[in-house]
Picture 1 (tube, rainbow, N blue to C red):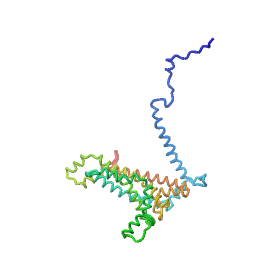
Picture 2 (tube, one colour):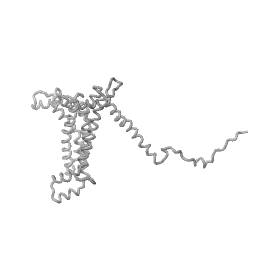
Picture 3 (cartoon, rainbow, N blue to C red):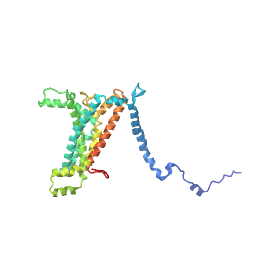
Picture 4 (cartoon, helix red, strand yellow):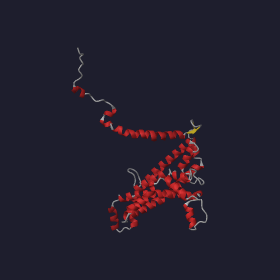
Length: 321
């Protein structure tokens, strides 16, 4: 006699089971699944290193595995070190010497390539942008070879045409090394800046220009009274991004001087100083304090430059002029 199997619930009852009440089972909460990878990566690779760096800046190493809490000792030492101030001065000098001509060239080329009907201007844009595709370290190696005092092309060329009689070691002259780094930065980035300026110029309303020319305005007046004011947001973007990148310059001084920042620390920029303290002197706490000072400096300057370029001279709502 076969054993009788108890019958299950009716088919209709099985399909009418209530859904499970999990957090992600709700339709409105499923979006969190898509943004979760970003927050996991942000917490792991950005927020945690930021907090860990601040904790490290309050410590000094005792040995390879232990640190000692010293409070603000690293910051006090930082602000009493002459090389720290010299690294800030070097960084600013190199940035200003490449940023000012970079914006000037970009404005000139952008206006010429946008306003004038030049044949092959797309080719010019590509040609100007090409240096930006090469890595900075590769360009640094190229200039180190060109300026080598024994076998460099520059010395050989100048001696052959009779400008100099004996080779010059350019990389031992502080002013020449800083000017070289600024020139490399300018050459690498002016094409990119030109493209950004041209994008800003292309977005402007042409009716403003037509009205100005009908009223008898010259090209200079149109440039200073229409083009430059309307380009302020574009110039603000260029200035802020260039400031952030320029204050972090590292690779070209590192390649040109083999990480020493010579001659006379003329190429010791802030990030190169930070790198040498962390990975050559193994003074990790001091380097972490330097990283935080650099971060605060870039933050303040970025906010100030953004507000300065967006200031229109009009009083805020509810305020007095």
